Amino acid sequence: MIRRLSVLLFTLFLLTSCAVPPDSPRFQSSGSLPPYDQESFDQYVRETRAWIANNRAFISEDRDLEIELNTPFEFRPDKPAKRGILLVHGLGASPWYFIDIATAMANDGWLVRSILLPGHGTRPADLMLADNEDWEKIIAHHAELLAAEVDELWLGGFSTGGNLVTSHAFTDNNVDGLLLFSPGFYPGSSYLFLAPALAYFWDWLDIDDEDNIATYQSLPTHGASLYYRSVSTVQKNLDTAHFDKPVLITMSQHDSVLNPNATLTAFQNRFPNRKSRFVWYGDTPQNLDDPRVTAFTSHLPDRRISTFSHMNVLFAPENTYYGQAGSYLMLENGQDGLAPPDDPETLWFGAWGQSGAEKYHARLTWNPYFDDLLDDIREVTGD
View (cartoon, helix red, strand yellow):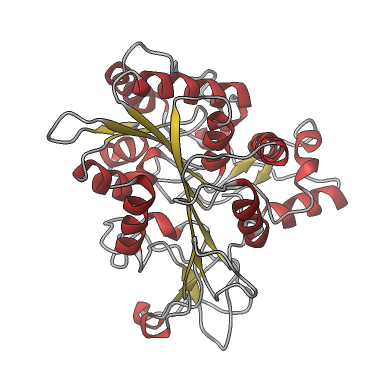
């Protein structure tokens, strides 16, 4: 979702034009947001599911599946849980992004909940209705609900969600640790600061075909502004304080959205706990002297993988939608001059914009090291 912010914001800055949406419900807001402060998580799930069913601009024949992938969910282990984790998705994404990690953690005895950030789950235009206070309040509310049921509270976040849960953890003593997947602390775009101002003049930063039932493809300028404000908040926290509790951070060296090296530096300087781990997908960073950092090569030619993407860390190869043989193939990947091959067996996979040697790269949407990631989670959390 935020992969092209640098190019798009710079283009809008130079050109006095804007993206004009087609006449479609997907680009017209629902008019209001659903409540998120229910007294119980069960009630929150029921009412949010009903809201999605009534307000979603559906893009496929399988409406039930679209509702399912965008609805908040809870997994309870077989025995009463002493530990719980609240998971928060990224900009444009959905609670379902955590389905594989949530399943594994519930099997390990965790009470797992994944929430829907206001503005998501229905249509891209609904991102115009949300503000950062909505996002901060929903995390605070559901962290409090979960803390009342468990002895140990963890928060997890992907991309923008990583920013939000980290900022909350600096203010909430109940939080015992963090799991952060491609956290959006340091964007790769130097023009992101323009987003709040541009939002006053242009409604849409990017308009794409909406063919992915788990993710918005289009981005209102206000959505980029929300991400910018999450960056500003988390960077202020990281500039002034340490987070002394355990944290797991994952990052791809070739992340097209973020500045991976800045995130690694922040881990070394701001997350001092000896149990913490940084999982780096790519070449081993030079002059690295931190035993808490583990590198996995992201160049796997035997699997036609050139690099790891911003999103692929979250998904098991067996995932039925984004997995190695999943039903959704992310072909549109920011390449010029090449057309997708007719034979999918000749496709290569990588980060946004990956190209080279006449190889067409689709987006890598699964993690070949998913089982290793689960082991790292267990190590950091003390399982």
